[in-house]
Length: 538
Image: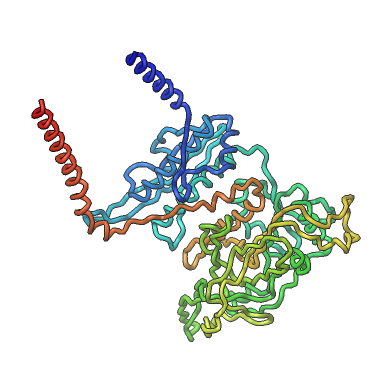
């Protein structure tokens, strides 16, 4: 009877083991939920109906930080495969593929004190439906340590991978439009952003005209540093576009100045720039002030400090009118984005605090700022001046607006020149806007007929976060599923204290060797004593 029961138990265990082999059960017990895939990602993966192959190129002799990134990437791919049987790991690629990529060369000191050089390829290749894309796994922000950059890379891993999958999967491409007709930046001046946006959208340019529904087909309208006033007809078209759920990225200046005059003469007058948008933006909850912000945290510019024009002496001088704007870590638009460079930026005031609109500051000055009212003049030769006057902190320069907006034309009606057969909408459906009070943040420079990346400063040879900020802003405006919130994932960085670890190394080695041996000795002695006692009793 006992034998039959034993066989039955073994049979049940074998059957249960075979059943559970096909059932995946995971429980993320980490504090930061680093192994939990978001619901939007799960839903997207479940809709994958063709083979999705992800090849992790991060391999070879890696240091501890890159080993973490490789392991996190492999685990993320494994998590993806839990929700879709079509997800698989790609085979290793040949040297011919690696030669087409830009590697990262790591110089570090070994435990023996020698310098070692390692070449790594922090990329993943994703293939789907005959299309292929390359994903950069490494988030590299200047000013951060290697450990911090690698940790931020792990934080953004799900977003980077799933963003690439979405681009490969999408059949219909949304359209965005750069507005023209008010002295906005031309195609060359927004070339860098246009190239980035073209990975996700069809990018058009055009004037508004008089048709009220001219913007209906566009997911986002971008207004890039206009210099001339908007007519009532233009404002009505934008207002009603917003009321029916349209999204607008406003990049505006509050002051007018001459960059050519500043470059040639070193001085320029500044006056208020009237775009005839104050009433419209005020109705939506913001005011772009007619002033300039100055900041001690700023870009340097070369200034000739010589008194002899024949022998110029160019020296870097801080230019407080070119503030390096801080990015909010609370918003998915700006989290883990480097500082944003700007020139001649204005401040933004939030109005209508109880209007039901969620207002989040995206860009702000540092803790040593001041505001210059207009009219005034900007002189490069004056330098910083009295530092004690920089007593303001965190002056808003860019904000996002979320909610239901009231129409400026609710009680005014449509202008006579507008052609429309639609009723006037007095209140919007839930929608979004972003207002940036610095036209320079969206403009890229050119060098020898080649466009420079948006946010690249030629003088300091530093890449700032303008490109990431502007791309994220447009992605956020079109994000109805919550993909951008994946950028807010946080993984705690737990660094090892090297000095303490080295000091405790011998102790740890003794404990790891001596204690197990001591336990074995005690256990063996106990067994011998027990056996001897049993023999004595017998």
